[in-house]
Image (cartoon, rainbow, N blue to C red; front, side, top):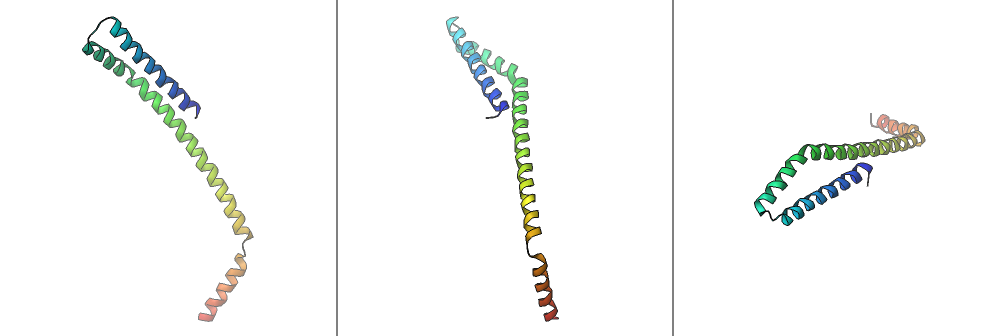
Length: 105
């Protein structure tokens, strides 16, 4: 798990604790289910900007790691292809194919 994913998980756990506290506090104060629902909806509305920014940071971190992985893999593939091309019997194959073509002409 990346640093951003860990932070995201901790933040979600903190939100769950807040929701639990809202519900527990509401029941001890003998509020009805509508007022509890209203408080939870207000909390959800208050969290939207934070949630958007937090999710964006996590996604950007994951995308950056994915891009770095693809670049590293691309470098490995490129190096292997260069190695294969420089070591392959290209000249011999080209002369053989040229001979075949000349024969066909």
